[in-house]
Image (tube, rainbow, N blue to C red; front, side, top):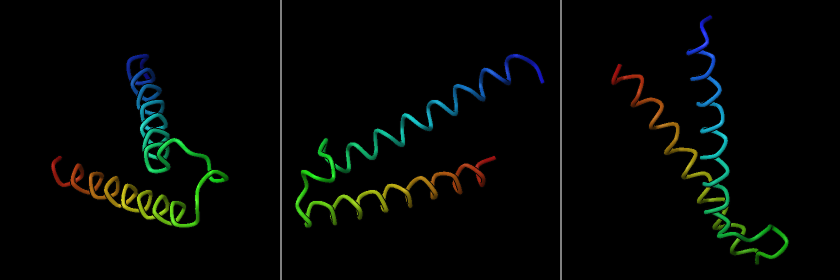
Length: 66
């Protein structure tokens, strides 16, 4: 494996982690689970599920676009 492929793989891994963390923070609106009311927790969970579905949809779309 050449160095360019290794660098690209590492960058993709870091970007994926960063994007996932950002989506989680945005869905919680910056609060921890202890600070949220039960309604906020439920809304946060549904937001995370919708974001996960959107990521899956994008992955499927990327496969078809190849």
